[in-house]
Image (cartoon, rainbow, N blue to C red):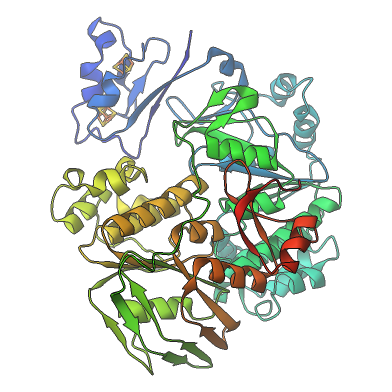
Length: 599
Ligand code: SF4
Ligand code: SF4
């Protein structure tokens, strides 16, 4: 007998605009049994015992608000938490291990934050039972497992926990003085000076916290979490807002904490970074907003490969129909069309103390140029100049088409509008009737957001909507600034492939600024590298062929890449490992051939 889950998304369900279609169409209701009925708060309530899982209400709900899922019955005993009737539920938990960085990988909405809240003691698990559950019941549930000790410590207030939350902007409300005073207060490990140095916080540490940029806030929050002396640490999305250099520095800080015998959990969507810093991986799979299942612990390589494969061999579970595949080498498109669609002379722009210089370059039809480099070197200014949003002080940009531009920071419009209305307006017709619906919207799951109001979208949902809205514009050139921000690892790979396919098949062109090296590696034909001194001077050479560009960029970072033998995904070689030394000697920082790597 399957174990049935019925979830109603209360953000989408709209009884004011819908005459309870679900209640009226349910065949079991027609047999005079109350499978779906109106609840006290007017939202429908589905009895998971009476429901046969026929799926009629799912198909007929005009707002896509109902999900019915059948899960194996044995999972019932593994239920850890359920937020309420017909709500999201979580099955199983990860296991803490001292001396280790444990990566947690899964799609947005499958329960990573719920896992952190429960494991850190912020949320008491209810085991899926109604009403208050006692600690005695919880400890009894975990009896004989590695989690018993963990929850015993939480129950007795003995677990010392340090959490770097996902939403770093909340720090501006909690502490309005400078970062140094905050760090001084929490530095129980006596590592303040090292953290300021490692995380390059020297210039920002004396500023008041509300003045800090997203990247500075992120690194300060990481420093605050790492400075505490705790038994267990949680870093929720530590890469957001940080550039590649900063991501590597953050990884080192996190690995250093684990080396002191601590248990560290990291939730991260940048697969290259997660791969680099984790010792083990737990996947969380399921359906966003409906349920999440935590996998057994796996070695990092096996865990990430299982994630890409959509199949966990040890558990014989397939959680995605298709595998995520990497093209081992996507050659540059020099020969597609020699006619440039955008051409720019040497460009210069000065703002206060900062000056930017860009060597001449061009963008060809069918080509994607990836733009990489540290923060505050003028990448966004360059993309704005190309898009015509900013004027250069010196130089000109000649373009054969209007440029559709997605800015780095996406904010929803003030007026109320849902996702479908926005996309219909841009397409000039019903967006489900155009070919981009199957090429872009469905693969990015943006169709699932159609009924949601733009103002109520999460960061990742808003980002995917903004990228889709940009690509739907009737033009030949797209300029996308940090399209990966807030979106999960699965959607990042999908997004990179969609952009590449779309640009090539339609003879369009794109310029993409991003800090996720894997996304840049998949999507780009050519690479532009920004160098200089952040906030003082930024310099960019003309676009290089991808091979050459990646080699130069990785050399600058001091890291070498190999290709995973099974999946073809790029992996950072362990510093000073045999491969790392050999590749550096050969000056081949970017490797395109699949090799057996060292673990
Ligand atoms: Fe209407 Fe769907 Fe809500 Fe049922 S779940 S009341 S069909 S909007
Ligand atoms: Fe009724 Fe079928 Fe919906 Fe279950 S899935 S509530 S049986 S309509």
